Every structure is written in structure tokens, then in C-alpha cells.
Image (cartoon, rainbow, N blue to C red; front, side, top):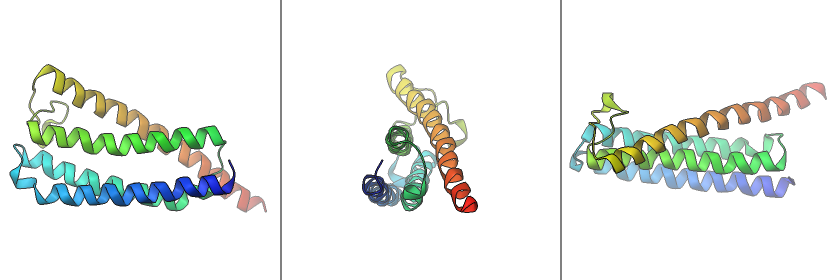
Length: 149
């Protein structure tokens, strides 16, 4: 991937991170109005933390040494994972459902909504694990290249 395209992806990650951060802050304003305020607080924190993660990732993105295809796949995995995280927890906060998150007070709910929340949580977890491993490899290659010089 040429550096300009990789730099553009990094800038997009920063923008999306700032946007996600804003959504997280906005959710925080409505925590007490949600059927499950504890889950709404979790949604607020997910938005803020995932937004910061995207910004940080965007800042280091151009340093990753990875094939073009892997960079593209990783970009979309991290965008999906961070936004799916916020969406899943907002749905749980609004509905009170989310049996996979009992500490935040999620109760077992209607099949379709519960299935959607569970799907989002499992798929985003797999995406984010893959993203972290790929980014570590790409950044390690960057470090190794600078050590070898």
C-alpha cells in the first residue's frame, strides 16, 4: 500500500475515533434516562474508550508494516468492532436485555434482540482480538526495521 493511502486510512481512523468519542459523550448525558442506567454507563464508557482507541490507532497507522490487503481488512475490522461494541451496549441499555453482560444488569430478553446483542458481542470480540494481533505484528515489523538500520 502506498504511504498516501495508508496515511488516508489513518486520518479516517482519527476522524471516526473523534466521532465515536462524541457519541460516547452524548450517551453519557442520557445515562439516567435509560431503562438500564448501569448498561448506559457502560455504553458511555465504550464509546469514549473505543473512540480514543481509534484515534491512537490512527496516529500509529502509517507506521504499521503490513501488506495492503491486511491493512484494508484490519481497517474494516477495527471500524466494525468499535462501532458494534457501542451499538450492542446501547441496545442493551435501551431494552434492558443483554444476558451476556450480567454484571451491568443485563437480563435475558426477547429472542431476536438478545440474539442481535449476543452476535454483536461475540463478533466484535473476535474482530478486536484479530485487530490487536495484526497491529502488534505490523508495529513489531516497524520496530525491527528501525533496530536493523
